[in-house]
Image (cartoon, helix red, strand yellow):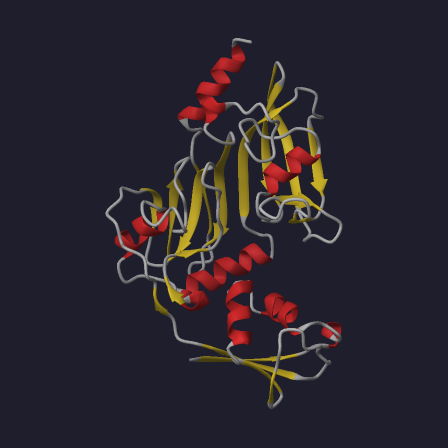
Length: 304
């Protein structure tokens, strides 16, 4: 068991307990915190607290984080394309079509299955489960680099960099339309769509989301853009580009109904990731070249 004590500052006066904890403990997911609260693991003063408890400045919040348990997922000997690895972390390339986490319908063949085999006993226990510490995600049909923590020390440090928006994440995408400005900033909050709960959307009460884009090359009816994430919301680039009228080519969710099937999903590549190493303090950056599906599509656009 790990016990945490957090004093409620004046600026948090009137905040809900669950929202306060989500902002104060950045290495636990919201779902993990909800489970701890529901199981009676959070007290305000000497009283067990519900997630909706309104906090007062000066109160002490006590959180008991249970010991991590083993992840009930099979380790599988799946080849990995590793760009960097040491005792604390690794940078790995995820190809288009590979799922990151096991889920209903995808119990094996995922990146987590492969990492469990590769990492052996070097796992993060953050969020209550011993697993590879995947501190950020990319969608199944997005290719690119992922940063994985191999212990709690690295996981906490890297999660803090994400919260502080200091992790450098640059994507390459082909989007519809050839008339975008040379560069632009999209500052539009993202949350669960009210029309379709399986989708994300720009909504007034969503979480803050910022994307900077710049044009790399223009084609007839399409544009190659580079997108730099300043936040990391679910489907952020896909939602933001669709919001400004330039959805990602091949996107079956946020793009036009006539999907470009040859792309087998969105033409989106998480090409560059940069971070400060948790132990050495050194800034490190890695770039994966454009994959074959991306360059093949560009070649076809050249012919238009």
